[in-house]
Image 1 (cartoon, rainbow, N blue to C red):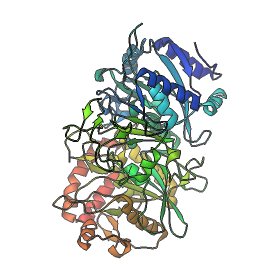
Image 2 (spheres, rainbow, N blue to C red; image 1 turned 120 degrees about the horizontal axis):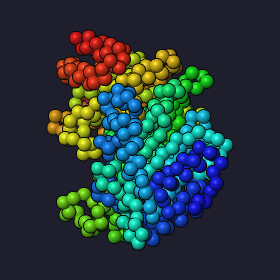
Image 3 (spheres, rainbow, N blue to C red; image 1 turned 90 degrees about the horizontal axis):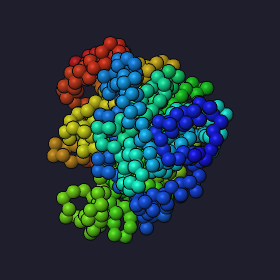
Image 4 (cartoon, rainbow, N blue to C red; image 1 turned 60 degrees about the horizontal axis):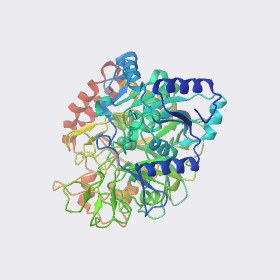
Length: 596
Ligand code: OXD
Ligand code: MN
């Protein structure tokens, strides 16, 4: 039983084959309409899976199974016939073996459920920079989230009917229903049966067992980063884990900036920054992923392939990110938050005092005296990007926006200054390749450990990372003097007593201003062993009462501490064996020489 007759033969065959394998009760082709969204939500409310929020129009809350709360990096596979092609940073299984195991799991896995076919576009429908995907899933929660995060629907189906290529994304929660069996509120498979698999040589994604976030909304990390990074290398473009923003100076000149940061470094906050310096305006193009191609004028143009924000809720507040708070007032989905007695969501560090009573993310009574957090640390909101009050008017421009500046960064309590400019492209690639961050509660492993996360792509690069570094050099060679300028930032410096040296948030605009003025050639930079640093008079500090010693500390280059970093960088590079580009090794030698 199916509601649509698809004229794309390859697609219709794949849907039929999948139905024969997974044995759903029915097949439903999604049209992306509001009626479809409302109908599925109403069904989930009726089944008890979704809770409508009294305080937020058209908003719903979901509670996941406590075993299914985050991306599962150790169950995520990049599958090439030759393990060497996956590289040292990815989990690997041979395609035949992985497919055989997963086909066994998929056998009859959708019994008793509807199989949804979601045609979606990553990027504006029909843009040359966009890609079409089709996700097959047995989760109505996934369908509704995909409505927000991607462009689902008829426009895409029309392109498919005309024979457009697509990336097949197969997803099942892995919880078939026996006749008469009552469904749970978050059905999923146990951890040892979860698989998030990528077959880059076939542009194919197979996900099984999880209904959560990047494991299940396959357009995001799976397609737009892991598969797209491999496609981008073959086709000569870039798929990056980067926010995109537009900064306009008081004279009206626009600068477009992308930034790559590991988790828990304030990427969404930076993407929606409200500048504290007068006359400067920031607009958000995207908060997580950038797809970039060289345009006819030789510059690099970026689109945001997504249509929504899938943001971490705890810590989001009017103090930290007012634009995100305004984006989630309506038409949003919340997952694993706490619910107040008034029928609103709540999470740790939201503005104001905590509620006197709430129901926590596990459905238990919670009060401020409780010893556990009310919202899960990875609780999320899913919100349409169009609802962000500072969404850039050109965010859906099919040709994208021209990039002037790349920023890399990480969380470092010491050593790394507030901002450094690279001496040139190769040095910039070195900065990206050696990016490191101290782990927080959001990462696996001990808190405070230094984790190298090259280009913030460690969990998202769909091929050997040594080849990925080389791809960056190749792109730089093609861009020549039109390449974006590269900077490295660290908003997270602390005093010896553990106090923040820099206020961050909107005041980060002061650092962005310096970058823009460097691009314009208006301000200087001091040459240091690690790159160019602002002269303290060139950083706009008006209206900020920052003690002079803080600024001095933020802009200090501790040569001794940097020298001590070198062995760790060398060890990091060794992992990539003979696929480490010689140009990176040379950068390390030059840094070492400059440090003396
Ligand atoms: C994300 C991540 O969820 O990077 O965006 O982990
Ligand atoms: Mn991300």
